[in-house]
Image 1 (cartoon, rainbow, N blue to C red):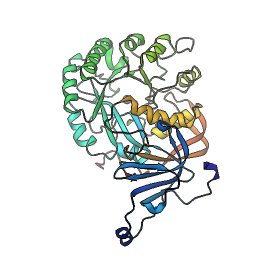
Image 2: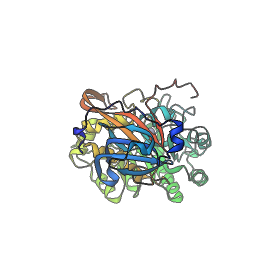
Image 3: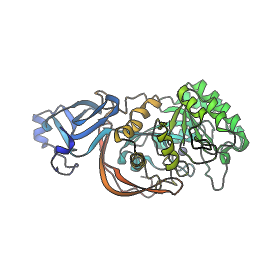
Image 4: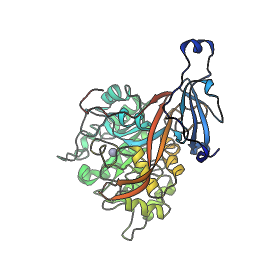
Length: 415
Ligand SMILES: [Zn+2]
């Protein structure tokens, strides 16, 4: 059944639940049924109007015409897009310890994103607080990349006090010890290379990060944007499974050469298995650079937001907006979904089956509307382009629980 044949339906949030009496008499096999939406699940090559049944926090079944009476709660998703819960592999969700962090839930699980990876906001000295006050309390599934620099990102760029300016803080031993105590939630390591955060210490920082990642046996995510030392030196030290985030920045010594071609050492790194991540952020995503890469058959492996305090009210806003920008650049919707679900899940070992709607996986599901209209989208360099489609979150299911878009609380409130 094509989605275009579906007649207008009641609002997606109309939920039917039998009376308590009826519930006692008839035991419905499913807790939740998401009915009639267009399912896009790249992990299984599925693009079809189907139903998703959830039981005990897991995907129970993906099928056609599953009766509404088989579930205690029904979400009618006709005319909507249904995908595995989105995974954003670059965010900053450790508030109250430095200028970057935002509370995860209002911006993530309420807006289609069920799993986020915090990209190095915390280091070995600050990770225990991140774990206790944010990772363990949030409804969003939070996993962490531990900053190899033990203080993490406690200072911003004004006044600039770069975390790699004093190499004493960059301790592979401390990082590996912290990883070993928290392997259930730490999925990789992170380090930043921009000249204002490192000064001339970047190559030494990269050597130490390499050592930490190798000893921990985890991928290393490198922020590279306007580095002090040449890009090729960092790429040369990156291995299969490592991630270059901010790959479409328009800063000096980026992904393109002087003629606008993807550099040879960049293609060589991809061939070795280095992964390329968007990490939009307030200063790292250029429409022009991204378009040139797409035109040269160099798409990103993952689309991520780099959501943090200074970009959450624009130009990033969140993952749906970031994903919409790739529709604008001509990437087909299923490929965008693949880069925010399946590919993201492959990047790190999450110890939980996510990024898929296969039976038995975590019951993480996102329901979106594709709004049609004339929308203005802005990149990190204040260039605005008009798009025709916008991905808008309708309802999100995380671990079997439902979340609707909400007003964002004041940043000073303690939730
Ligand atoms: Zn970041």
